[in-house]
Amino acid sequence: MLAIRTFAQDELTTFAQHCRIPIVNALTDLEHPCQILADLLTVEENFGEVAGRTVTYIGDGNNIAHSLLLGCALAGAHVRVASPEGFAPDPAVVAQARNLAAGTEVVVTTDPKAAAAGANVLYTDVWASMGQEGEAIARQAAFRPYQINAELLALAKPGAIVLHCLPAHREEEITTEVLEGPNPGSGIRQKIASMPKKP
Ligand code: NVA
Image (cartoon, rainbow, N blue to C red):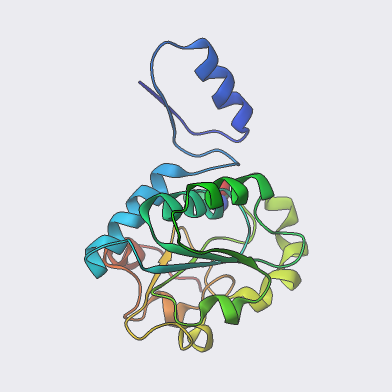
């Protein structure tokens, strides 16, 4: 097998078309399935099962959002994605998730509070992904209301866990208070503890 971590999904599909061995997506700009498999395992470790839980992603409708939509739909979890206008997940991926979902909700919204209400899991990712570093400053204003902070977390279900694919940008998509609080899921607490603190 070959695991490929790259930008363009096309590179991966081209490889797959010309290879006789299995190709694993280890991150493209479209999807990040291995990350989401690990996250769903964390959800299972924390709640006993994934099915029936509500997983809310707040932020950029990017590769993480896409794989979370698909992974939750397959695993029987309700999934909600809240993104600023213009940064919603790819409608084709949302449609694919809705096709996969067997009676569970697949919600895409611009309202982070409605998405967070009653959720078991709040998930976020950086506002500018790898390859988008040049857009980082311009994106900040649009994404500011989509920060996971104590106020947003208070809307989630008591005992909710917080996930982030890491590395996190403190005080951007997530506050240090939440990142270092009791809510991050078991699988990522250790990783967070080893991350350098921002001055
Ligand atoms: N959306 C991020 C995920 C990093 C694990 C990126 O593509 O850079």
